[in-house]
Image (cartoon, rainbow, N blue to C red; front, side, top):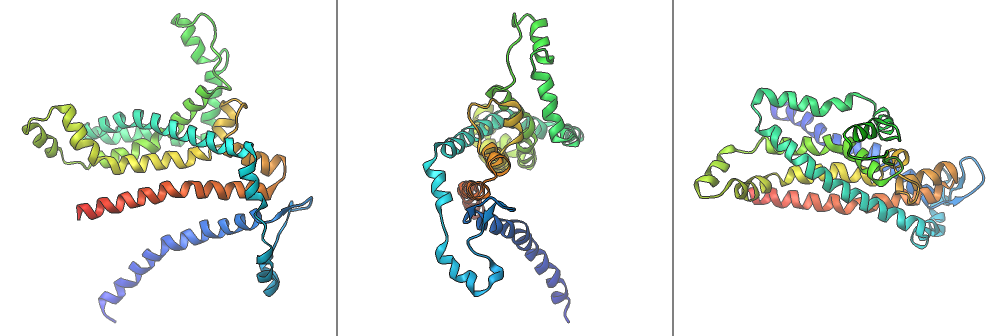
Length: 303
């Protein structure tokens, strides 16, 4: 056996590993959720009556003709689900834009630091991950409560004359989201900006471009892969966020993550909740496809 064949096998296995991971931890669970979404609600354990059961053999194939999409029709006809999806999208887009406005200068500053200080800055960004996510959100509850640290500081500086209501507001929710997801925006941006050739900026300056023009014409276009990666890393989980809106935001309007929780654990309506989860996943597919196409175009242009 030649050496080329010996080394080809590990390479093939490495190429198969991501697909195997997707099948085991994405497609298989998604198949179970899709099956439940096509079932009927029942007072039983589990609380649904499956339309078809693969263990029945050929009889299961005949049941495909009886599949019901009533749960998906409910998502379109009920304003609760429509408003939940819309609010989730609005919150995710707004939060992602805020994260980009805050994270980009931080990542740019980290990339311009001396090499020995970049590792320190990276460590400071990663440090919050060492603490439990839930504990950090509960800490914000103590900070934002009526007699919390934030109101004490504002009163001491005479910025306000009375404590401000922060909890159970959209402001508290956005603050918690930005705080929690900021590292996910900074790290991809830093990885892209740190690889940029500084001589490009020098060349732009030699051609008469001001620092601001050099940034918009050279730095920002080259950092777009990091912008896209950071935006997706933030946007996708924020759409389905449950903990932060539930603990910090008001109950006037629910995000889809909270609606899923209510349907699963309060109403015990697993089929409708599964249908909402499937619809949420399909809603997130277009941004991923768009990002993949943009990446391929950039690679082709670079090639």
